[in-house]
Length: 287
Image (cartoon, rainbow, N blue to C red; front, side, top):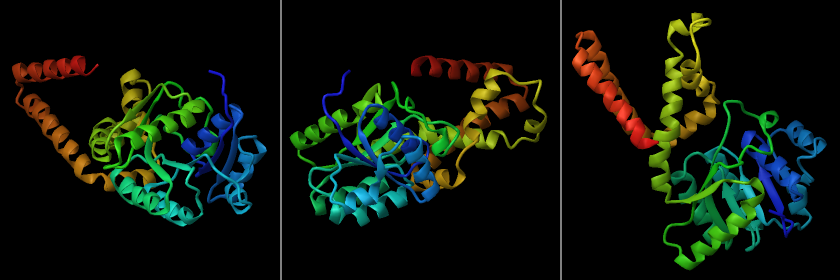
């Protein structure tokens, strides 16, 4: 779809997600201003054409932002919004990209309300086991789902307007769908669909057998171990921020694995076959 407007976008945090957003917006012809803890990364973004300038210089010069993305860890996202809030205009939409929503949205919705701008929780369901600006690419979000979390208690018409505006501003990223939910529902779902998978994968490769698997592995090994290669500090913060939901999911899988283990130890073919058939049916229903 041809773009009918040019947006001014601020991106704070130039890792995989922020770096990919910068590339996508610039390729679509929009203005992008960036901030990162690393001056070298900012310079690289400018040199490779992923940014027009620096976020703070643009803001200091009185520049406006249509949308600002906080592509940061949860605690840093909250701190950054609190720092920026007094300087943001009412027309600015701020969206975070954190993998947990309750802790971020509770704080950021309150900050936005106090300063008169709009904040929506966000979580792009796209990524890679590689991290950093160099791993970013403009098509990272193509056909992926974007989750948006409006403030609880917001007037329905106002919330709908904020979501529609976000959909317009997000269009250059070419998401396949937008999912709107509460922060609590997001965190409960993501504990299963993402966080549990990362824990299981990371634990699985701790088997000593992993060191000698070459020549004996194929697709199933690659599928199960892909996300074991992760950003440990980031995932530690995400896991702990959502530990109630994640511990619940871990308790469930530990109990299920124990049933398989006990059936094998007892040589109980009937129970083992039943468990395997149950798992197959669950996968069929989940597809």
